Image 1 (cartoon, rainbow, N blue to C red):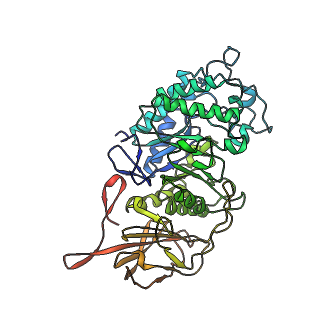
Image 2: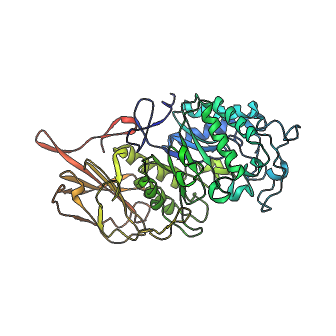
Image 3: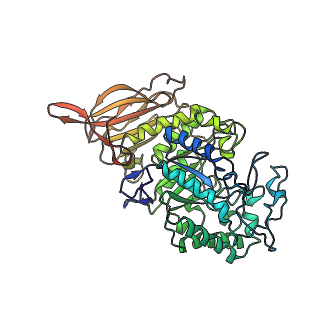
Length: 498
């Protein structure tokens, strides 16, 4: 099976479609260093496991200049027999991988190094490992969201290529872009991610030499005939169009958001900002708090995913603090409880027309939850963390009144009230347990214009002993002389019935 790409954007601007015109809902996992660290057998093990647990793509770095754990292969690739991504240094000699920078392992801030890789000398032997990752993804009908050249946190103080940009000419950066564009323009299963972990126009300035060089690299990828979609993965808490130097070429609104570590924060606030931008773009939660980092619990991970899924809608990315850097025991982290929770989320969304969902009170949709909603998060400006609002009930409904989904988070207490005018008629109501994937019937209720609001009382606990649940309403229609729930379009248009 091959990926039916490349992906494009539906005429509504709201969601991705494959080459057959079918809605594509990204459910992405983040093994950042998948090009440099695993063997081919390990790569296949990772992708098979992810595929089996409902993920349809990964987010990864094409190149990585530093080791995140002792003994790592970066910047070389194990699958390429240790080959480095660039052949020469800026003095014309063989590039040695800048071992001082690569092996600092966070000991210094900023880390010392030569930052002397010649970007115009891309090594085809190394990039054959990138080819392998995309080929193996394609064989599994999976998407690769690839970072062509990782900028690095805090202007590359301890990782990333940002400080090496400064030593390369614009022409050399363009040469790298041309190489990447020519090499990858015909892959059906690729999307590009610019960044990551810094916002060049904000941190360095929109006319800073390195900002302009990074943009020149992107433009050269496109000029080579590469028409894949782009998103911007900047420093939290931002969306793709928050960097002025790149906003005009952003096709997808990537959302990177979380609380002010170690304080937890929701994900719906910035996701709803992304959905509200004009013109409309597909939205994707590209990063939030990782499992097993910053003391994040399984329950918090689950809430982050559901808040964003209801608000983007449907499109999420999940990461684990060990697997992203291929740390000790990383292959054992692929089937964690939090990962399985994401799988259950995907099963629900794949069984309904998720691509028709509109978040509450946005784009003409009614305010769906009118009482007992909780407190909305605070994040006044781009870059502000999401503060508070951990009890807010996120909700979305289809504009035709056939479906409504509301996530009641674990910190919410009491009942909440739904405006049944959002439904087109008689509606079946059920609770979905996000920790078990099971449904509990509530009943049927009048919907449509003039219908009374309905108060819903969540069950006491889910199967994991927590209190988060998902309310699912769907229209009931007459089939012959019997009432039946409406059907829905599943993943890529397949017929499903909840």
